[in-house]
Amino acid sequence: MSLKEKINLVYIDDDRDEAISAYLEESYHSENYDVEYQEIAFKGDTGYESLLESPVVASANVILIDSSLFENDSIKCKGKFSGEEFRMILRKVFPFIEVLVISQNGENKDYEIIPKYKSGSSETAEKYYERVLRTKIDEGIKRVITFRNISRKLESNKGIEKFLVEKAVDSLNGINDYDDLSKDDINRLIAAFQSMD
Image (tube, rainbow, N blue to C red):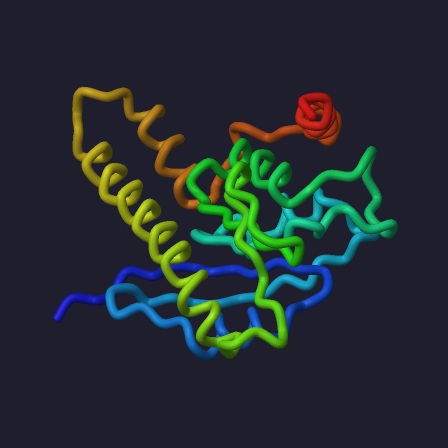
């Protein structure tokens, strides 16, 4: 019997949603992969840099992040930005992490935002997240596994420069020493996203 591949699933929120947390920790399971679940309680006074520097974030494969995480008054950064904008920043720093954004403001298909469970609905929070969130997580895991499979093939390809292969594989594994963004670089990136609205 072969060992299951490990997937790191991380939920990031400044105000932990008990229903999401319970679903991810207790109800979500994968028959094909060994999913390890962790949570990060984001503290606004540490700024978004704390997430970019977090070993838990760097080793994540799939991240679920709240859309309004960076919009409250305690955030220490230039301007406010949304979880979906932060998804783009994470994509630059960690290109192989799948980031899902969830919001209490409902679905937004233009930005692929998943709506949070609303109490008082006809189904339980667990059934709602099983219906709405499971597929999104499974799709994210499938993309991660695809990249892993491609990286294995890439490592065995002798026709490609070794340095390039190492950097691609390091990036897949959350090692990005060669591509550090400064705080000013990230602030310029945020300003560029905000000017698009």
